[in-house]
Image (cartoon, rainbow, N blue to C red; front, top):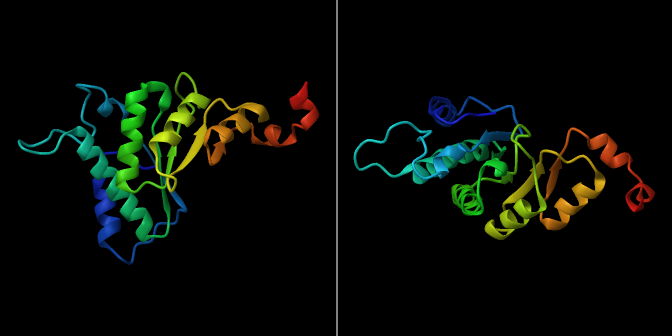
Length: 174
């Protein structure tokens, strides 16, 4: 997991061709407070004339996407949909897509709720087809997982995955 404000790591990896990332997917949690009006800037104070928070967050995501792609890895951005309203989810998806993220994930699993069908449907409408969606957080049944896939999720993240697979069609019908 890469945190915002760790630009040093990005610069070291990006500027040293002998360093390899031993990861298939880099994951970063979007600083959701940056999307709220007047929220703190996760990238630090801006000098006069510098771009606003959203542009700076997008630039951070783009640096991480570039880093991941140079090393044949993917970038997954977790937007924590439980903490965002619909407009903020759309904005977060737009920033991620414009910056080159490969996946946008609904949740870390630590918010008040996880993935919802409505969130995934909104994300799918807000993202181009080449940006995939990972629904995660609170997915405890096969029926819930299938509903999220039908809504547009490409991948499911669940600590209950063995039970999801073990459920049978008879269990679902009950």
